[in-house]
Image 1 (tube, rainbow, N blue to C red):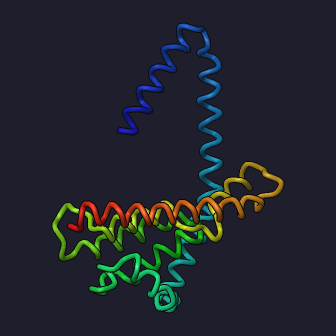
Image 2: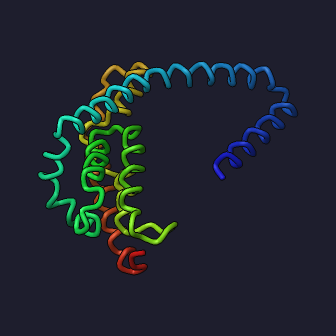
Image 3: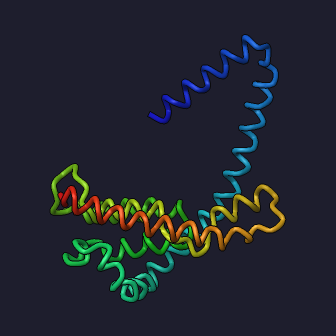
Length: 193
């Protein structure tokens, strides 16, 4: 769907550029945009590789298990079905930890792994309340260190890259609380699969 929207926007922009005589500016903008996107991707790749490596080291060294034990009382309240059955508790903890560290690129493979383990024993093609909660927390979890945003600010030449930390804490905490409350309310209304 998103691809169709972008395609339509590009086609409309191209048509208007032809009729308004702005094809030179469109050509320059396309080339500059491609150049900028490649440089931003390279700056993000370094941060992504670093934090994915750190998460793997934490997992292999057993620190994720320790963090899992510390977070278990809180996560047991948020993911009751998974923690009751013991399904994917380490994966959930790794996913939440990566999300809290602001490494959104590392969250995706961890969340896929967690959801595939949570899916065992459920109806095929249906998401449980715990799966939905994990997806929500992968998108709107409290960010202790917003590494991706800091990397983007550094790539764009911001003088003070860390001044956004307190606003990110406030916004991410508010989003997480509202998301958890909505997931709980809607989970009670629609039930679990």
